[in-house]
Image (cartoon, rainbow, N blue to C red; front, side, top):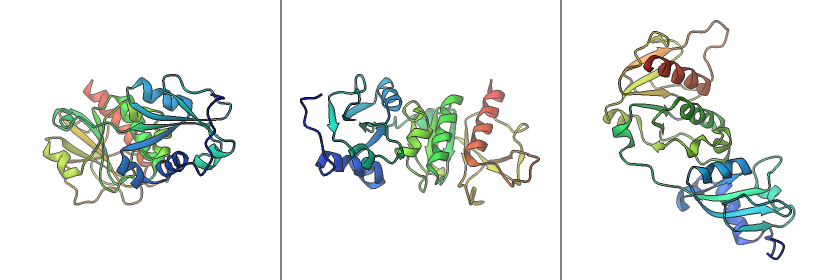
Length: 248
């Protein structure tokens, strides 16, 4: 890579990289997003996602199969990355279309309804993929799945499970029974009916699920501590694996 000119911070390619990392609107407009770190980039490649371009800090080895590497000048990676300790490895990944029939065929999905914290959504996707769900649904108002913090906290799961953008009415229209999580109503999660085509719905961190949402059944996770409820990602994880246990 020594023969390639190093890209400074004002280079248009570097400025684009920074925009894609920092702005949801830029990612949405271009249909691309940035993955940082050797492991996550390798996960994207292994899952068959298309790498549009690849950037490495001077002295770093490029990621295998990520394509030709553009070399960043010293100090550029630190200014571009949203991490305190940047990896020095970036890849611009092109979004790929989700199968339009995934909801029509799905037997078991997990819905993140207006979940605002990137770390929570990433953990929800990671747990959903581990539990073998058919898809993760993100409703309007939920942080986007291409947010760098979501990608990291998903540990690459976002590349292996379909993430569909849809509202709850659309999910219900496809014949999935909506099971809502609540801290104060519904049956115990260990006694709930997890059969058939289901969609577990996890609500906003502060507000939970709106009482007017088209929920068919409510379930609650009983606990003994003083906390009013579990973190939304933890609750979603518990319910996913409880459903898997009942569904065999």
